[in-house]
Length: 459
Image 1 (tube, rainbow, N blue to C red):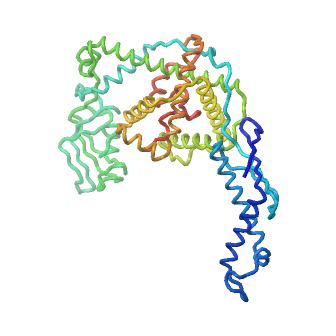
Image 2 (tube, one colour; image 1 turned 180 degrees about the vertical axis):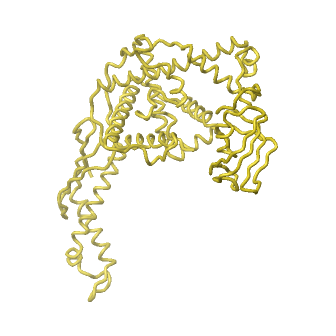
């Protein structure tokens, strides 16, 4: 079987096959002989049915089977040589014994992009500054982690964020269901006696009150959940969770060296590094956008569908991460059009990066793979061997390698870009950097582009 490949476009190919007449006759004769040796027909011994009867009765089926055999054989040659994407379009002549058989397979391949003008691209890069209010907020968050329960003054009224230490009796008619000599009740998030907040809010130590209250059905105490009961309460004290002031002592308790100044400097540096990384990620996005805009090429539909599936899977997971049913994320026509645009952008960006990597001989080393496995293991608090196993089990090692190569190439490009300094309000909103960083976003790893090297690892 001989064949020649035509290049119809950057990503479209046609393979024209010709099967010699001798091979056609051989395959037909083999198929007829197989049927003849196994076919039973009244009036003839097994294997003695005349061949002309076999051909008359089974000719169409045999010719169809032989055509499929030739086409499948040809397709396997193409798969081995070109790694096509999707299924081929098939066109073939009639098959006849003693005559050559020709057919063609038209298919898509992943386009190899020749990228130009990718060094020295102007990319906006915001000045990295740490806003005072952001620093204050982060310091306050750290101090909250070492909060203590303190007793408030006796004239302090119980409020939503307070803890009331109270004597409690709950009655259902004459039947006493609960008696607590002293129990702590969190006004705004009480798990056992939800509903008592309507009594306790505004009360001061020493005050007593009796009134009917409905205990929420959320209470795990089945004998009182959802019931309207007579509640008798006496407030013994009002308490609150209170964070300490910033001081050398609180800084030491949080594990910072150098007292409060050392703590401020350390948190400032953490924020600065986070904001700088966010700025770099935004610069990478801007760089990729310019490359995609300046390189127009078609992407085979199977590749778009593959990328679209990844985008939809990520949208579903993000929806679930926010506490929603993953099946209910927006799948309206407008949303699907947007997802498709994201998929096309992501696949174009990926092909451009892989093209640059080939042109510049950028490669993924064994150490790169090891470092990435270790990073994933550290983030997921799992062993290195377990993470490697996930990728090997899912046959995702090559995909991971491609993602690492994309990231490595993008870093290479940014190092050679012309970073144009802009004020923070002219470029990315750096004040949002910490939240973005906590969500794990990078230059090409947001939900639009789906090129995170650690994405796809399943727990």
